Image: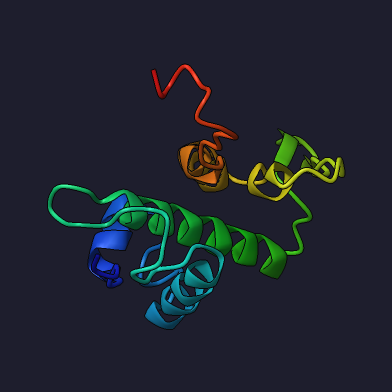
Length: 140
């Protein structure tokens, strides 16, 4: 299997929020490299990538890159989490505090891209089938 190569123009096309003015190429590259630490991008990855037939890993890595960039932008703005409510008169904004349930999904629920990533990665997180003996309905 091949490795996903970051195409910044393609990434910006999928996520137009990250314009060249708002997000430098280096920030996208750094977020993508960090995403590759979370989701392996080599031949041993459990997520297939064999273009043009299977682009699962590219979709997941781009969503994870978007998630990391969104969190970085929020942190740079002093934002503690997703916006829970906003007002216009006398300007009021409140942020939702991410739940601390200890679940792996909590961190991904902070952004839309993270939520997409979490839902899409779930089929690859389950373990394999373990058969304890030949006396199984699978063996006939």
